[in-house]
Length: 306
Image (cartoon, rainbow, N blue to C red; front, top):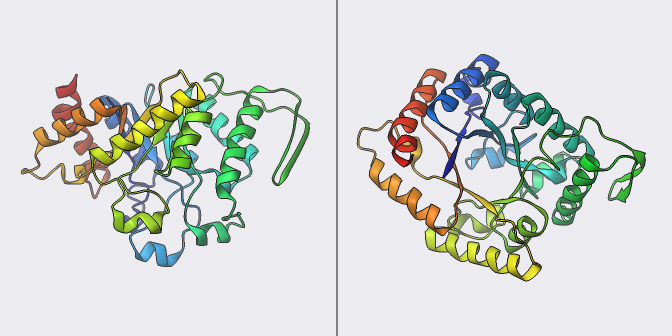
């Protein structure tokens, strides 16, 4: 099992505490020292106020804080969790990904998705109704841009006739592409077009709001992994699919009564059903607190699993 630590760049309620380059660098170095394999950030260019009032969050442009993390570390992977492809022209997205991959020496994991926030789509002038088709097209367009000199390609909103994107990504043929979402279409997208899948814990009461299937326990997750495996066999996919899932309850990690053994058992259960990566959210109202929490997680969980 590998672990990715969430940077608190969404905590704009704390002023500049988590959005400074030195803060990001401090947390990233602490994560690397603690044995985390990656750090991750989210993507919300212009969220609606009513979504924010229901528990939503702001975000920096994902490639900016990940660049700060890259500059402060040497082995830590840099993950978007997740990047909404239909918000942007696919070639601008491809250039951002390439730039970070080159800057970091080949450490990007691009977690991507079709998105679900209709108002944010409208604010950005993006096509909400056709977001799934746009997501699939963008994946193929980015792959082509990363690998094909003199590219000839036409698609929704673009016409490419003799274009070459340089530099190419360090990772070949491109950085790992992991698809977020619980819907069966998202799972098929991961199996057919990408390298990994990012399901999310999703209680039934939020399924309609997030426009994604519920996952409430390991059994729900296991059933969808079985669907992914069946589809892989159907389409002839031979490569294993990375699966990244979020650990629940770890924001209470500094609580003395936190049940570390229960978390270890949960991690082992998830590994048995096929999860290869876990995204971790840890507590901390300051850079120092988050860095300390990362160290404790390394000592009590990562080292215990080694």
